[in-house]
Image (tube, rainbow, N blue to C red; front, side, top):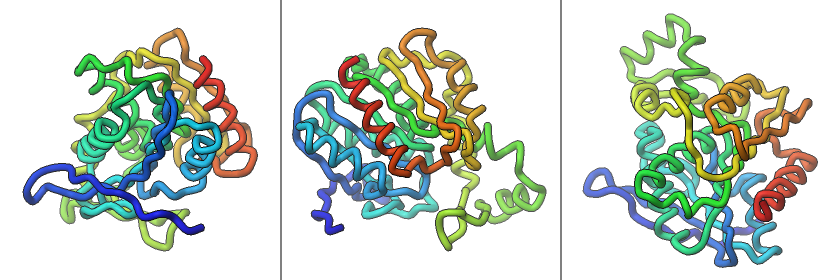
Amino acid sequence: MTHQPPEFIEVGEGNNARNIAIRHLEGKSPGLVWLGGYRSDMIGTKAEALDQWAKEKGHASCRHDYSGHGESGGEFIGGTISRWLEESLAVFDAKCAEGSHILVGSSMGGWVALRMVQELAKRGESHRLKALLLLAPAPDFPHELMKPELTDDQKSQLETRGFMEEPSEYSDEPNIFTKALFDDGDDNRVMKGMIETGCPVHILQGMNDPDVPYTHAMKLITHLPDENVSMTLIKDGDHRLSREQDIALLLRTVETLIHA
C-alpha cells in the first residue's frame, strides 16, 4: 500500500526536540485518535482499518508515531512514557482542537490514553473526550507485568548497561527495555487508585494473549468507575487482535461508542 507522506510537528526544545510524524484526516466529530503500542507504528493493520473506516463514514481521524518509532525522529532508546505522553498530547492539541474524540489505545497506547485522560482533566478539558477504546491495554506494564518476572541477569543488565534485551515474537530485532523506562514508568503508574475517565470506556481483550494476560485487563477494570465501563473478552484472541474478525469487532465497537 502506498501512503501519502506524513506531516510533522516539533515537540520539545533544544537537544530534546524531535519531529513527530502525523497523519490527520479532517471530518466530523467525534474523531478517532490512534495511540499505538510499544515498537509499533501508525501504518499497522488496526490503525489503517480505523483510518479507512473514518474516511468512509466522514469522521475525523488522527494517528502519529511516537519518537523513535516509525517515521518520527528521535532515538527509541531514549523513549519513556512521559516522553511519549508529551508527544501524544502535543499532537492532540495541534490536530484535535475541535469537537470530541475517541482515544483508541493499543497495548502500551492504552496506558498513554489513560495518562492523557488524567492530564486533560487537570487542564479542565475532559469535555474533549467522547470515549476510550482500549485494546489489550498494558498500563503500568513495567511494574505490573515485567518486574515480577525479571531474572537476575536482566536486573544486572538494567543496572550495569542501563537496558535489557529480550527476544521479540514480532521482529527479528530484540525488544529493548531501558532502566529509564522502568523508573519513569513508576512515576506514571495509573493503577494505584481510581482512574476517573469522565467518559465511557470499552476494553477489547484476547484471552489467548501471551504478552498482556486478560487478568491484567480485569485488574484495570477495578480501577475504573462502576458506570460506563465494559469489556469484551475474545476467547481465542491474541495480543495483536488483527485478524479479520478482530478488526470487524473493533469497528463495530467504535460505531457503538460514537452513538453512546
